[in-house]
Image 1: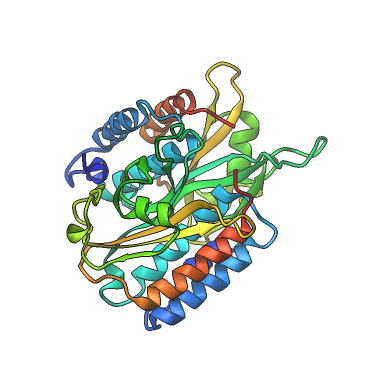
Image 2: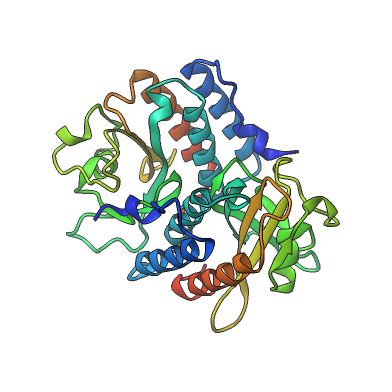
Length: 183
Length: 183
């Protein structure tokens, strides 16, 4: 099987169809493989190539990947922190406290953050000054409902994401949460 | 600090200069951060953007990333196996036995494999049929000299890599080997 074909997306499909392909391919790739690094690495690739196949604004996505709960988080009363996981795009911030930025807010509240304009978000962390909008979706363990990771996608234009992105990324987060063994 | 700038490469630099920038940026990013997933994720991004800034054949690189020693390798007498780590490019094979393909050969022998034409390599694993040449460099622990990971770079044309790639990727492998805490 030539795995690379999994991230080949037709150029004339809708965003819904692209996300459906991401979910279907991810489910296939995760079948029999629960290593979280392996699965997040392939999931980042699927997302990246899906966005690049779509019209604007989705093809303006400039970062797609994951942060996970840092096993070396500082002890309480400090907030825990996220650490960079597999991604596609330019070099990114390595650690993010739960108390800071869009990623931190998603991790701390266990709720999706759909940010049309990151410059209007208090405490936004600019890993890449080119990013103008962002969606961050928490990944929870299915049993204990603990935040173990987040999906983070940045876009170089404002209003890069909508309720369709939220719907499908939340489905992907649920699939990833139950498909991996978390440290 | 805007980290994304670390993976911005000027368009008129030589391959040597691009690799020097990769090494310098990697050393800076690894300073104070020994998480292997975080560091390999950023290193894959640095490599990818370096290649894309160069003339042919380097800009035809279609996959740059890492495999690591799979903690769930089958027990002896089976050979150990590699598992997919952070990368940039299309979806890739998840596990590779030490006994198979270019990556397996590099891991089994702890020696760089510089393959001008993958179709001429016995047992080559075609994760992506578009890949025509490949270089794989083992990453060893500095003390026990155990192979813990490999750098894998694929190119869509034959003869994509030369002794310059070998020299600098081996330097990067040494830096990564000593800069991360391995599981």
